[in-house]
Image 1: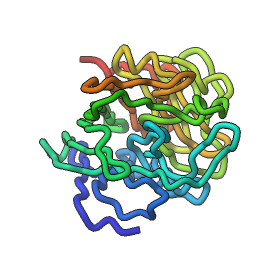
Image 2: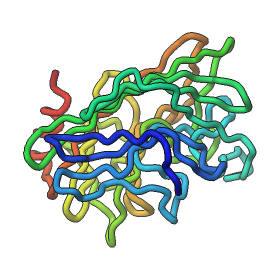
Image 3: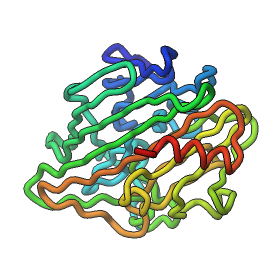
Image 4: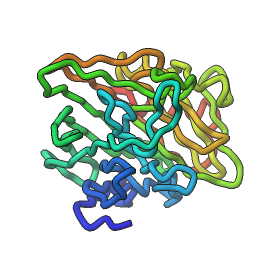
Amino acid sequence: MKTPHDTPVLRVAGRPVGRYVTRPELPGRLSPRPYLHPVTTLAGTAVTELSPADHLHHLGVGVAVPDVEGFNFWGGRTYVRDQGPTELDNHGAQRHAAFQLSDPDGFVEELRWVAAGAELLRERRTVAATELTDTAWALDFTFSLTNITAGPLSIGSPATNGRPGAAYGGFFWRARKEDGPPDVFTAGTEGEARIHGARADWLALAGATWTLVFAGATERTRRDPWFVRTTEYPGVGSSLAYDERLTVAPGDTVVRRIVTVVADGRLDRDGAAALIRKAVSP
């Protein structure tokens, strides 16, 4: 897989912790989009995967939506009601337009979401990396999607199209796959079955030698249910369209902000809560 174009590197305390690929060369069915990979802990452990064999369209960390007015900005097959996953010629692309700011600790980017020769959404993406401790840092990721068409745009998911529990679409982090599934827990519960679809303030994904702690950092983002997978594959996202479609009026903007703690070692509940509080505090 070639990545010949812009690839800014995020750094924390002088150490590289993430590479951002703006113009990846991908097969058409993967819905081209910018992504962060590899993302690493401060000790250098990779905590993302790119196009793993189980899901080729999982691209590190980014924004992916399977249904924007019927167009697929996720990759792979499209879930069709009463038909199931179907190969369709409906893939859109997120196109990097420009960096409005680019520093070692973050960037502000403008993107255009294009499908069938037309621009549907314009995105402003802000990403920042911040040191928390000598073993943990935070990735602050905000995306703002503006409908620039003359009519309303409807954002959906396989769940809203008839596949229960498959409400993926929005911010998504494909995590490191290891011999066993990672543990997942919140402040009050644990396990994929209990946390998938929950509206928890934060959730933690703990692997063999690393922990990721995710939090919605705005009121609207906190209301989005979490999409969680640990057994089939390790991944976490926030659901834009969990049980109903999200309609964006012409000129309106959808804003979401997710902060992720990236830590070496396996954090317990108290440790995870303390770090995420530090990461999202003003």
